[in-house]
Length: 397
Image 1: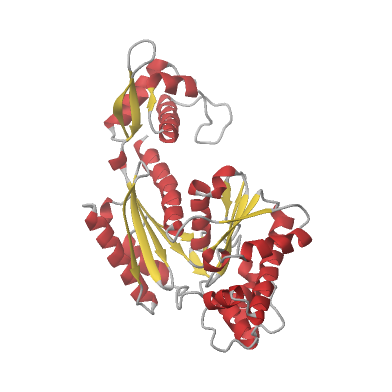
Image 2 (image 1 turned 120 degrees about the horizontal axis):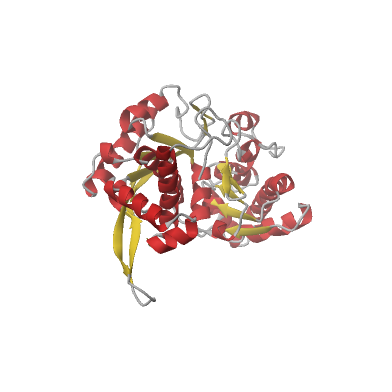
C-alpha cells in the first residue's frame, strides 16, 4: 500500500509507520462494522496478508482497542478466534436540551447504551440549563462508575445552528438566551473540549438513519413539526449541514399565512410561525376555538368533527405539503419522514400526502417516524461514536 507523503506529493511511497497505521485503521473499520470477525475474514475483506493482519491485531490488542471474543466452530479447519471492539476503549455521552426536558445517555465504544435518563426542566436561563445538563451528566456517569473525564466524546443536541467556522450558535430562539455568546464557553467549562454541538433535528435524522426508516434508503428528509419546525437532510448516506450549518432550516421558508403575526415571522421564520404548535393554537383561536391551549386539543377537536378545527388542520397539512414540495423539488429524496409531536399526529400524514400528490413534481413517499422521545439522544450517540472512533483510533494508530 502506498500513500502521499506529508508534503502532499502524489505517488510517493508511504513510510513503514504510516503503512502500519493505515493497515490498523482499515482493520478497525472492518471489526467495527462486523462486530465479531476472524483473522482469515479480515484478510479476505481487506486484501492484506495474514501475517500483516496478525501483526496489526497484536498492536490493536496491546493498546486496548480490540479483544478476542470466543471462537467460531463448525467450519472446516481449526476453530477461528474472533475479534471485536473492546467496549471499554471509550465512552460517548449524549445530551438533548429541550424546552420541557433534558435527556441523556452513555454508550460504550461498541455502541451499547449503558444508561439513559431524562429530567423535567425547571431552568429558565442559559446558566440554569447548563447547570441542569451538568447535573444530569454527573448522574449518568455515576450510575456506570465513570467520571466526566472518562468520557471520550460529549455531544449536545440543541436547537439552533452551530457554525463551525465561526464557532457560534445562532437561530436558537426556541430556548431563551440560548444563542448568547457566552453559551459555548459555559458548556465547555462544564463538559470539556471534546464537546460537539449537533442540531437537534439533524440528530433525530441520524437516529432515523441508524434505527428507523432511513435504514432502507440512501437519501431522505426528516421533517420535525412540533414546538418548532426543522429538517435533517441525508443525501447519499450522509447528513448535509451546509456551509454555515443551516441546511434544513425550513422554519424560514416564507410560507406564512395572511393572518400570521409579522413579528413572529421575523423571529421564528414564516413556516414555523404559521405551522408550529403555537401557530396552530393561534389559528384555532382566530377560528373561534377560544379555549384551545395546545395543538393536541385542536387535533382532538378535529377528530370529533369540529368544522373549525378541521379547517385549521387542513391548512396545517397544506403548509407542510408545500414545505415538503420545496424540499422534493430541490433534493428529490427517496423518502420523507415526519417526526415531532405534530408530525406524528393521527391523520395528518394522509392529508399531507394527498396535497403533496397534487403539488410535487415526482411521486414522494411520506412515512411517520416510529422513533420515540430519545431520538435526538440516539442520533447524538451515533454522531459521537463516529467522532470518538476517529479520535481514539487516530491517537492509537
